[in-house]
Length: 272
Image 1 (tube, rainbow, N blue to C red):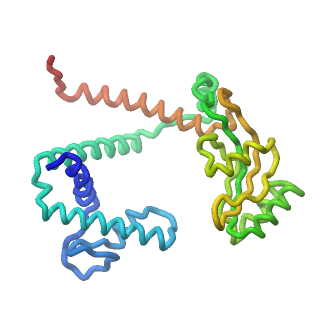
Image 2: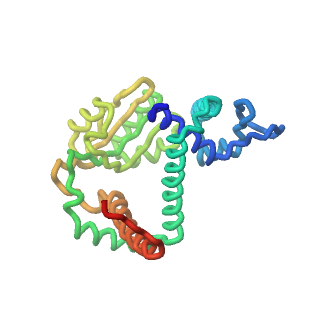
Image 3: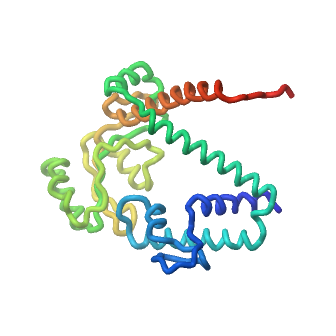
């Protein structure tokens, strides 16, 4: 049995075991079925997560579930789960997943506490960590699925003010995207037509109506540009600084937790 083939199916087994797909032949309500395995509304909700989604997205989730279940059942019929290498990979995957869940539980119980001033203090002491590797833009961006509405928004934003125009159009039924003071690295700005336009703007300037793709009419305002190698002001990258700060604090807490656990277990590493 090839190792690559085994790896493809190990996750199918792990997913099936962990999602607890029911194989009972009942008359319970279900969304989809593959032989005696049912996708119930509760299981589908766990797959989809919270929030509202389009029918297309839900149909895709169901299609993926059916695909996974068919492959899993085929793996069972093929005897794949009896292969020693498969069993090893499943056991290893279980340990990795259990370890990850244990850490999540630990950090839920041991929530980090800090003050907003701690974030700014961390930035001041570690500014060089936030030096930019790419040209970076602080932008306002809005998109519509109707060109006339996009043109009307731009006219109002140019004649008065971007924020005032947003207040008028934020409940517009053709509005599809609205982001304010979004920090974007040059390499992450897509499509190219949008990057080119942003590069041509000066701070405060509002672009023409762009059509990056059919049915998408976008206007962007450059708030500020930061050149590669510079360090943006704290207020501009506060969210990013907080994420780095929390990640480092978690790493420190984790080290202390592991040191404590190491002292409670018999651990031996033999010389080789």
